[in-house]
Amino acid sequence: MAKVCPERRFPGGRTIFAPGDAPDALYVMMSGLVTLSHLSEGGQESILRVLGPGDVFGELLLTVPARPFRARALTACAVTAIPAKTFLQLLSTIPRIGFNFACVLSRHLAEMALDRGEAGHRWSFERLVLALLKLGSAHGVEEGGGRAIALPLTHQILADMIGTSRETVTRDLRRLKRAGVVSQRGRTLVVQPTRLRALVPGWPPGKA
Image 1 (tube, helix red, strand yellow):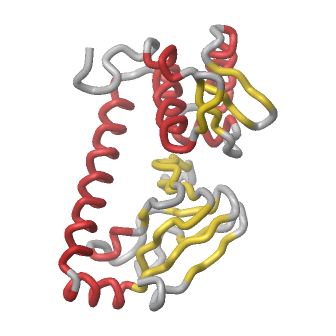
Image 2 (tube, rainbow, N blue to C red; image 1 turned 180 degrees about the vertical axis):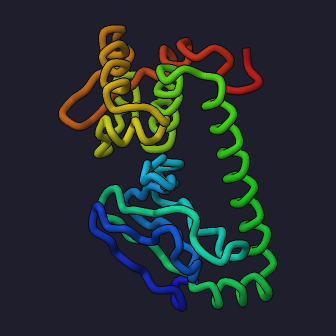
């Protein structure tokens, strides 16, 4: 696949595709980070996911006439772009690719359904705790019993991820820092996953 699919590079802040764009390709993350977000009619951005190496996005190319979300480089990144026509040919000739694609879709649907359910009945503080847990699990590095998240996460980005205001995120982060479950070194957040989980009863789902 790599031989027939071009690699594209984007600087941090560059939009990869925007709502309304033609769904002309599927993307596989090679390096860097990308945010996938929804824009309301009033221009309010809600970040749905932060994607890293190995993640797949733009997978709705088979079901929608136009992109419903925005993908933007959070850091400088490289992606493999699989043109829609090429992807359809691969689906019809290599069954394993079709199976893997179905698994990707199922995982993304499950993640989005869980996120929507959690957001519906948790306060902003708990939503922030869950976001930090997920970011630590997906992008953190072990450090002194915690997870160091070396991402360019501004308070506004965190606010967009959990559907609240920047001021609320600032207040809740201060609370977590005072409790000793989150610390900050420059732009790196260090979280203590075990202690964070204790702040969100019932997480992970299905466990006491």
